[in-house]
Length: 212
Image (cartoon, rainbow, N blue to C red; front, side):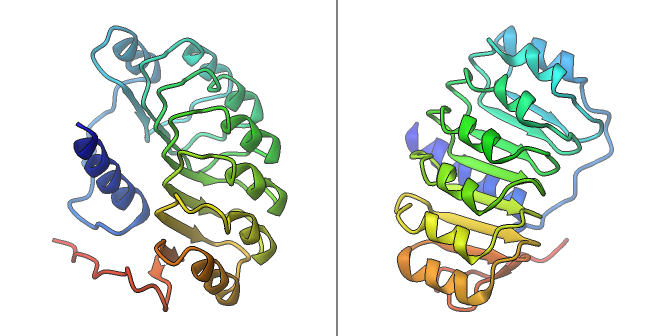
């Protein structure tokens, strides 16, 4: 069971971050946010994935007691620290994907309370180098992808002791190749992507599959 979960997480991470380029998603109409919440509450699902419309901070209040929720993916939603506050009791949440959020370092500090969080994909212009200290306290985190987060090499230093981190992707940040190389020295087994490319000295790099 653990191996199956591990495999699913890896495939999910690859799909989110660009390592796998398979068949693009179709244009089928997705279920509404409320319908997906109901499905989780009734035990029919443990995921909420919204890619075709926006969800608000206030909408997330419906998740406060949604204990079975394991995966939350909101692709077009500008979730702020207020919305993050509604997620802190989701003790089974393993995957959190908020590529267009507006959260700050304070929001990151709230995410530390999620004991099962293994994959975090996050975009926000409001996160600073100081926020990386909160990420370093996420002891279960294995896959981290930061998008348009204005951190610098100084922020990477906070990640040096995350020996449990397996994969780190950054897109459109202010980190340099030198800063990433120093992180690679501190975490030699980590797999890195920078702006959708493997880090030059990442021996764990692999060929990407071609589009069909």
